[in-house]
Length: 84
Image (cartoon, rainbow, N blue to C red; front, top):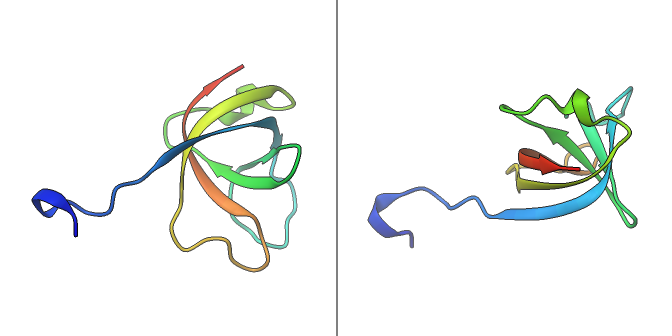
């Protein structure tokens, strides 16, 4: 049960890896991807231009987007903040 009638809380988490353009994928979601040492994530952001961070090692804060992964793709993250 949530307090004050609010919806589910989006939990933020930090991820570290290299930002790459999404390119052609079988899963068709995300504008970019984050490659970490152990897994890949599809990325999008409503407030940050992810193209500025392409090919750079970053630590980003993001929330998981509900309903993903689909079509055998990776988890889908909404990036809230990013630092090099």
